[in-house]
Image 1: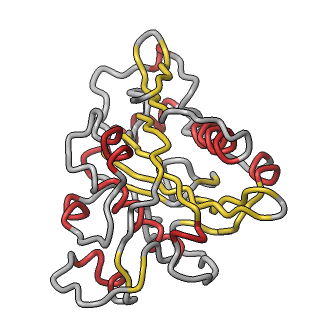
Image 2: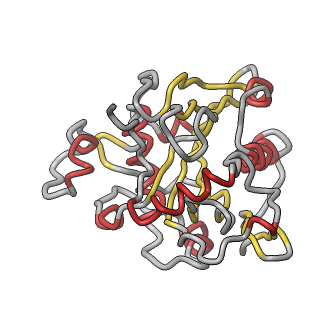
Length: 259
């Protein structure tokens, strides 16, 4: 039998995955966790990035989300934003514009790699998971990493200037797969190269632009529900919030503001 495709597959964490399955740990909750589940040798978090694309409409903000396939062993059948693991080569990709200085300064906090890698990973993942192109029309870029050939083959190049850094969340140490994820948000009318619809694929299905009331009815990981609340606070309530930082200690989860 063919093994289900899992874009987050990491051979270094396979043994831990089997142990976690035996304990029947749920993958749907970052914000509540039982310290009794702490493992002796937790997996090292892998850098990841996510982009929340939104559109302002007469129905209020609409957010692009899709459902992870049941073949995933991390949050299967949950609705999430496009995103995924950072590749080392992402930071080398050319871009027409970089993160605004203020955004970049905050992303640098706790970062162990070039900060541009995070928004560029988000651009790549949006293209791979939805077919949408975040960027501007451009040509003449040669020698790009192989994972980016399809994106640049569309006659586009990334633009990061209008990305807003929303926050950072680290998966608790009792999970079999752990990510140190940076969340960005951008207005789709500005960020996307055109109005093409998202296309369901192996990684995300039922891709749609959901209103916030519709999102509230979806099967979401709790960390995603938390991020949605952060998005709503900014887009609807117009709150000027600093980026969040969620991480775990033996005393429980810590929620801080960065910057």
